[in-house]
Image 1 (cartoon, protein in one colour):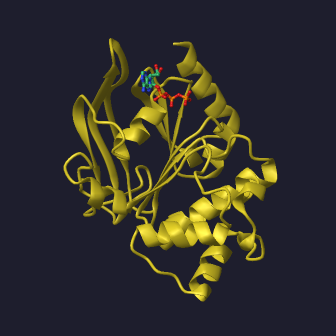
Image 2 (cartoon, rainbow, N blue to C red; image 1 turned 60 degrees about the horizontal axis):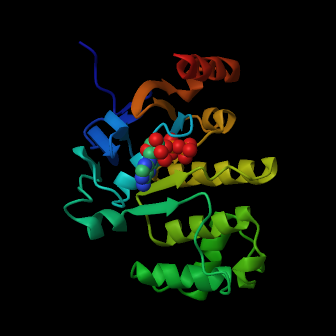
Length: 252
Ligand SMILES: Nc1ncnc2c1ncn2[C@@H]1O[C@H](COP(=O)(O)OP(=O)(O)OP(=O)(O)O)[C@@H](O)[C@H]1O
């Protein structure tokens, strides 16, 4: 019999612990067109999971159901065991979300945005704590006092990371955060994700960036027409193998 280890590298699961993010038999249609069909997905504590798939495969719909923005037609999701449809406030308290364009108040500084969003989740920050959060998020503290409308996309995302850190989010959901970042900013952003992962955060990221998905070293799920058609450990594939696998699924 196979012995259960505390951490199974092939799945990322910590046996004995429930997954931080769980989708079971999820289905969702918009009118007559199915966006998700019987989707099963689990992301463990301290795991990075990248969702790949062509435009319209259902990645954003999956994230939106976890976020409680959409209700599934069938199946359910759990965040740390909590159903966002039944208890949205408790579910949301565990989540941080970074969309393609982080929504911040443009006329406020990065620091004021951090302060405001942290206060919304019930956290009052000292100046030292703010500086510490910006340092961990990789944003220069001097830049934190400039208005957000002068920020690059990468800087806005760092404020998003600082907000997630301030909130002590247990799971971070990201939708195409890498698109439009230059290679240096994308690399820096991925390093921040790894830091969050190492501190125990479960990361679920929808992306078209096969290269970064593999570099992040977690698990990769490939979606097609609302279904999860493949799931791999990123470290088990070379970059060309991942590309071939992806293209083969897109051709079926
Ligand atoms: N609010 C909506 N109303 C109608 N159809 C929708 C809505 N949201 C998504 N869809 C449809 O559901 C399907 C899945 O879309 P979704 O945005 O989840 O895909 P995606 O994998 O995130 O795509 P992309 O990579 O382009 O962001 C698509 O056919 C899309 O047109």
